[in-house]
Image (cartoon, rainbow, N blue to C red; front, side, top):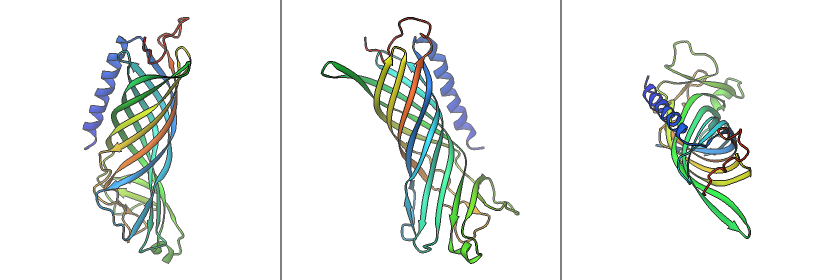
Length: 264
């Protein structure tokens, strides 16, 4: 299938990271979670018939960081993440489509840190940039429309399936024939770094994720609705705030651990 080649490239990147990390004395592993707001950048959006609102979701998973140079660090995460959309009808005022999509999110961010002082106290902050790879697992949503009301149905709950629209479709299913399940983008980030003890790090990140890949060129078809098709000829853009805790596993047995992003 079309997404095998990007997946192969993605795993090559992971293997390169795992190959170079042994050359450095600091390898941090930990947990990461956060809140995210996303919206869709459409190729063409019919603003006369539809309006839209941002989607709010979350992400959570594992984080790792590898010291590359004195003030440079490579951070690689594997997260479960939610994207979605909220579409409201104008021509059909009853229409409401609230969708939640499930992803494996793997950002790879190259970071540069800075030290600042306020009085006698110092703190660290960083800027970063890097690629973002999302793998679309599936999704679900709720749909309301005049067509459904005419059949005495207030709303349907649907799930997303990938593939051709079958001759005998399942009830409550949205089919995407040619979905782009591997989606690429770019991340720009900044944030604060707190070190409560040597070898331990709390990190607050503010990230903008710019999606490059469109999700699906062809409109999705519902099993229960004829008059409305689902348009995902668009890319996700999002803003995310995350908190992570990382621990230096390489130096865990030593009395003195090196500080994260050590500038000395």
